[in-house]
Image 1 (cartoon, rainbow, N blue to C red):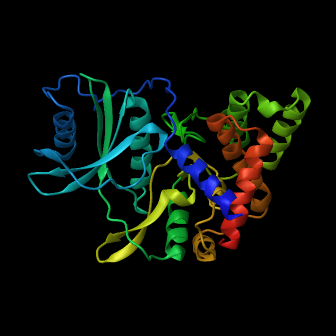
Image 2 (image 1 turned 90 degrees about the vertical axis):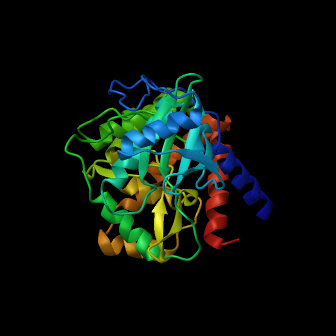
Image 3 (image 1 turned 135 degrees about the vertical axis):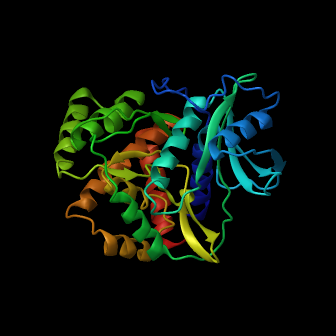
Length: 338
């Protein structure tokens, strides 16, 4: 079991650093794209974007540290502002403007709720001389300890923030390195069928299933998801590697990062926490103390995690049975704390 778990974890880390697929261009105005930049180096371009965002002069230089992971093919580093000695976390990727802009927008949406800690987004843009895109965030000092009860409670508080536009997000993003469409839909079953399950089935060639079985699967899924959830702001990729604790005001507080944000059923976030472990019973107690999960969430958990199983098929060209076995072994080992 230990050998299988180690291989599973290695595959998971590969998932977080897989090469990015191109995203469709967004129709939103790209104010942070430095069209009139005078920068002659990449670091100068990031400094200009930060200066514009913060409303003061920022002169960034390289420093030690790397912070949280660089999923989707982005590289990570740390920069220091010479003016204030403030440290920032940087993600960058060649021709990765859409991907990093989407991450910036997702983190900003979570940050705007004023609930759970995220790395505050500072700026995003692109050094057009070489196509190097970037997203700049607050630098957080990770630490041990911290309360999983508080983590669950804060996540539930974030989920209470909902959209009046329905289910979706104003920009497409990625789940790992896989494109994730977020077009708005009025109902949750329709959104999940079109933009989550249907999307993954298309990418996997229906996961090798016959047409009649695919039709039955989609119909049954829509039936199971007709529980009328609120369109909550959700992280979207909440496995154990995308949460931690950081030092803030002399204490360890929970933080989440590397999202695939959209407005959807909050149960989808909670469901993924079961896949690879890393979340204790205190986490679920904390969540339910703030906003108890409704009846039937255990059955819907399987539906939501099928999305991530199919995504592994997309990323690693595994058969459906191989991917299910991988998830089952990883989850079992995590539960047993092997």
